[in-house]
Each structure stands twice: as C-alpha cells, then as structure tokens.
Length: 483
Image 1: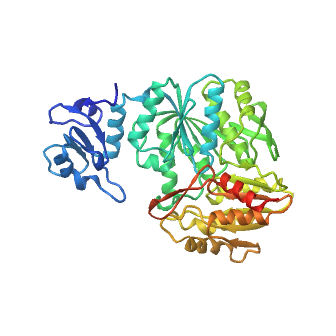
Image 2 (image 1 turned 180 degrees about the horizontal axis):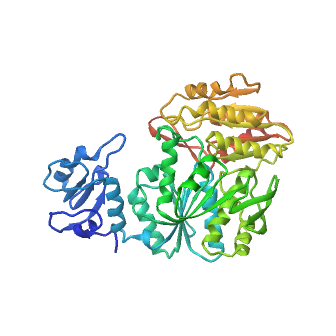
C-alpha cells in the first residue's frame, strides 16, 4: 500500500540521480520533529526556519538521507535545484501519484473561491459523481468531512488527501488553490483539467510584496491546466485571459463574453438571471443572493459545461443548492431585524456584500467588522472606506488579532473614516460588539457580521485559538436581550 514505505530510488525517479545505495524509506518529511530512523528528510527553506540548518542533525537522528538545494558537503545528501519542487514529486510518488488518477478542478482568485468550489462539487454530486473537495471551510471526500487548517494543505497532507479520494472512488477533486499554495509548490506535480480565475483585489500583501507579485502567483495555476475559465470583469482577469495560451473561455456579468449573465433580478432570498452562451440563453434561479453570486454561478456553469454536463442538469442542481456556510448566511433571530454572517475580509468583498444587502434593507444597514493581526496593514483603512460606502452605521471590533494589540488594529482601521460622515462605535471585544449590535438594532435593520464567516474560532496571541462561533454568539445575545 502506498505510504507504508518505499525504496529510495523509486522515490527519486522523477527528482534526482544519486550514488547512494537503494534502501527502504519508512517516512518522508520536511518536519524535523518527525524525523526517525529510516526517514528521508527534505530541507525546505521557509520564512522563519531553514531545514538545511539541521540537516546534519537529522542524519544523526537516523535519517537515511537528506534532500538539499545547497551543497552542505554531507555524505548522505541528495542535491536538487529546488527542494520544494522535489518534495512535491516525492510526496506524489509516496502516495502512488493520486494526482494522475483524478480529474482536478482548480479555483483561484481573491474572492469567490469557496462558493464556486462548493457549488461545482454539489452539481457533480447531484449528477451521480463521487467528488472530493479541498477548501477553506473544510475538506470533503464524498460525504465525509475532514477539518481544514489551510485553504491549500501542505504538500504531504495535500497528496495524502488526494490518495484518500482515489481510495474512496472519487472521480473528481475540486480544489480552492491559494496563492500561498502555488508559490510554495504545495500541490506538487498536480495538473488540472480545468482552472478558474475569479478576480484579484488587495489581500495578502504582507506575504506578496505587491499586487504584481500576487497576480503572478495566481497566474501560475494557468500554466498547469488544460482549460481556463476567466472572469474578465476586472483588469487582472482580462489581462490573464489575454496572456494564457491554453484553451480558454471568458465570463462576465458586465459585458459580452463566452459566458455572461443578463437580466439579473435579485431578491432577499432568491436570484434569477439569464445565462448566455453564444446565441443561446438559459434561465437560472438560485437560493443564493447578490450580484457577486451571479458572477460565481456564471463561472460555475462555465466549468461544468466544459466537464461535459448538460445545461439542464447543471441548472437543476443549482436551483436545489441552499448556499455556503458563512457566505451571506442569514442567522435566524426571530425578531423584526436580520443578521447576516459573511466571510468578507477584503475591501472588495466587504463592499460587494454590503452593496448587495443594501438593495433589500428596509431600515438601517449596520456593518460590524475588524481586521486580522499580523496581516497586511495597508488594507485596514481601505476596509473602513469600503464598509462606509453602503452602511448607515459601523461597529469596529476585533477579528483575529493574533500577536498585535487589538486597539492598535482598530486605530489603523479608523484612519479610513477620516472625513467620513458616518456614525460608528468601537468595541474591542467581538462578542460584546455583537451584543451591542443586537441591542441597538431596530425594526427593518440588517446587521452584517463581516470577516469570520464559517470560522468557529478566534486567533489570539501566540497562536492561541479560542472557540468563537458567531451563530452561537448571536443566539446568546438574543437570550440576554429577552423580549
């Protein structure tokens, strides 16, 4: 069985030649804490730790060899040009190349990945296929749910998940592919049948030095796919569509494209539009709401058509879909005001959700949000400006403060409200902030809780995670309010 041990030369077949004798390998890892007798250790250079610094020590611990990209002069070293790339190939070989046994569908972009990935899985499942999913909310193998720590898992875990999907009889795997996952080569030698690009707006500039580097990271996915589906509603999507050379299709909600939406009608709990492809149009109805979801579903249909599904079967599945947890999710209140939970944590995403909700808000639109600590500081005032654009009132609070002072994060956010004529309150504790929002809500108001979405935790100092589910907090707050 794959993963129970392999021979060294077999693992290195697509990686490097070595003069070391062939031998049994009991484990492959880039984690120095896991190294034991019979292990192959791959030295990865990260932001905070370089595996090369402990290579000699790993050999003393019992590793049979170390894979390096810098000549360390060790007797049992295997020199390669890029250890991240080598590790991906080694992990793929360790699990019997599961990436070659699945039809891979990759979704990338700043916003919309989770919705599209989940709807694609739903459509394929609805049409009789067994499907795996790797994404932000959770990983899934058919109906089995597996906790997700990262949008794109690290290399070993990624290949292990694909292997489990193959063993479970999956034919397709739908993957949210992050910029981190692409740059760090976590997906190994995976090649995608279809890749989709949603959009590119400011995010992760604490990691990518600027928007150009962020764009180049996303573009990497389109060098390893057969068919590309690109949203051309922003400049980066249009640029990508013009640059890629594989078979490609454009989609849009603002202009004519290979696939485009027309006659959009948005209601609080339902949306309809005409999906147009060349000279043919098809009426789409869905339980999700918002212009951004019209875009998401237009791209989703484009994917499924290129997988060979009939349009009638695609539309039936979409009409049946109830929505994604933490994406414009209505939290029941039993009161005369409403609460919506959404993952919006970028300026573009928060503007989109608020613009959508504004169209059916009878009273005031109250937006509660914060910004994550140890992340791109430049987007904090931009978040405030975006939130102020469609809101009647703002409640500024914490998100995942991590190792930063929550008050300092809020101060950075408030810079974006200078000169803005909009009432706001700052409540550092997010639970108390939600209680405050509920207490101040009036008949017809809608409260949008932005930033946490599906997350059921908060990240505090020293990476301490505490349980925090906004659905539970709203329920508790309503009980405290009484009648």
